[in-house]
Amino acid sequence: MNLLPQSQRIRVGAVRAVLAGVAAIAGSYAAAGFTTGFVGAPLEAMLSRAAPASLVTFAIVVLGDIGQKLNLLAAITLAVLLIACLSAAALATGWRQRSGLVSVTVALGLTWAAVTLLTGEPVLALAAAVPASAVLALTGPGVPPSEVDATARRRVLTAIAGVAGFSVLSYVVGGNRGGDDTSDRPLGLTAAQHQEIETMLAEAEAKSLPVSGLEPLVSTSFYEVDIAAVNPNTAPENWTLSLTGAVSEDATFTYDDIRALPVEQRFITLRCVGDSLNGTKMDNALWTGTPLAPLLDEVITDSGCECAMLRAGDGYYVQFPIAALRRGFLAYGMNGRPLPRSHGAPVRVLIPGHWGEINVKWLTEIEFLDEAVDGYWEERGWHGTGPVNIVAKLWVETQNDDGTVTVAGHAYAGLMDVSAVEVNTGDGWQEATLSEPLPGEDVWRQWSYTYEHPGSQHRVRVRAITGDGTVQANEELPAFPNGPSGWVSRTVQ
Ligand SMILES: Nc1nc2c(c(=O)[nH]1)N[C@H]1C(S)=C(S)[C@@H](COP(=O)(O)O)O[C@H]1N2
Ligand SMILES: [Mo]
Image (cartoon, rainbow, N blue to C red; front, top):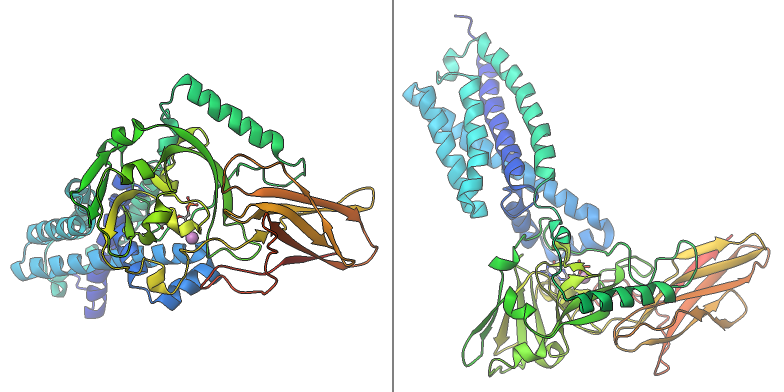
C-alpha cells in the first residue's frame, strides 16, 4: 500500500470534513432557499442578537447593508465549520470501528439533528444531512488515517470539484425558492376597492413634480431595514395575531379575521431612525389594511404602564404606549399588491408619525405590559420610538441648458405636515415649489427650486417648515441615538 505521510493524512481527513460541511450548507440552501429553514438563517440571527450594541450601531450607521452581508457570511462560515466538526467526529468514530458505514451513518444523524435543532425543520434538514454523509461515503472508506493511501487523496480532489459544482447548482436552485413571491398572488379586494387604489395611485402620479430623476410620491423602490438577513416566510393561512399579557382573556385573530374587517387605503411614509441626514431610508407607499383600534377593543386590558410590546415572527419586539397604538393600522397590501415578504407579509403594523422601527413587520403578538420594558433597539441604545425629526432631503441637482440650476427632493415631518420648504443658495431663504399634498396624516411631499447659476461654485442649503411654523433644526446630529438632524446642504459647481 502506498501510504501518505502523517501530516497529509490528517489534512485529507480535515478536507473531507470541510467538504461535508460545504455540501450540507449547499444542500440546505437548495431545499430551503433564503428562508428560515436555511441553516444559515438561525445562526445569522443569533450572531446579530449576540453582537454588542456598539457593533450593531457601527454596522448600521457606517457599514449599512454591507454589515448585514458580512454577518450572513460569518453565519454561513460558522455553519460550515459546525457541520465540518460533526463530520470529523463521525469520521473519528468510524475509524475507531474500522467502518466507513459507521462514519456515514453518524454524519447523517449528527448533521440532521443539528440542523433540525437550529431550524426546527426536520424534513428540510435531510437536505443538509444527506449531502454531508454522501461526501464522506464518496471520499473514502472508514480506514483510520494511518492507513489512508494515495488513492484517497485523488478521491478528495475529485470530491472538491464535485462539491464546488453541487454548490453552484444549489445556489441557483435555492435562489428560485422563498423569494418575495407574495406579489404574484391577488390581493383579493372588490372591484370597487381596486378602483379606489388605482385612483389614488394615479393621484400620486399626477401630483408628483415633473423633475427628471426625482423619485415619485409613491416610491418605486421602498427601503428595507431588518434585524435578520433572512425574512420570515409565513403563509397567510398559518398566520395569527394574539393579544396577550395584561388582558382579561387572550384573543387571537386569523388572517381571514383581519381581512373581514373594514378595508382602508392609506398613504403612509416611513423613515428609519438610522437613516443618514440626506440618506434614502425614507419612502412612501399606498397601504391597504384596517385600523388597529377596533381589534384592541376586543380585549379588556389592565396594563399598569398603559403600554404594550409588539412582537414579530423574526424575533423583533418594540414597546409602545397603547394610546399611540390606537392610531395604528394593520396593513396586508402595498401599492395594490399583497404586502411583500420583505415588508412584513402577511401583516405588519403602521403607526403614523413615528420612526420606522415602530412599524413592526411580520406582526404576531401584542402583549399588554404591566411595566415598561425596552424594545430591541432601546436595548441597543437607540431612542427610535419617538416622533420623526423634520427633514428636507436634497436628492436631485440638475444644471439646465438655459444656465439655471434645479434642486429637488422630498420633505417629511410625520404628523406635523410640511407646509413649506426653503432653499438658500447664498442670498437668503427662498420658498421652493411643493407638490400638492396627498390625503393622509403622515405623508411626505416633494419640493423643487430652480435658480440662476451665480457663475461660481456655491453652497445650497435646504430646510423644511411645518404647519405650526416649526423650522427644521439646524443643529447637526448623527443618527445615533435620536435620528439624524440638521439642514441638508450641497456644493454646486
Ligand atoms: N419584525 C420586524 N419589524 C421591523 C423591523 C425588523 O427588523 N423586524 N425593522 C424596523 C425598522 S428599524 C424599520 S426602519 C422599518 C422598515 O420597514 P421596511 O423594511 O418595510 O421599509 O421596519 C421596522 N419593523
Ligand atoms: Mo429603522
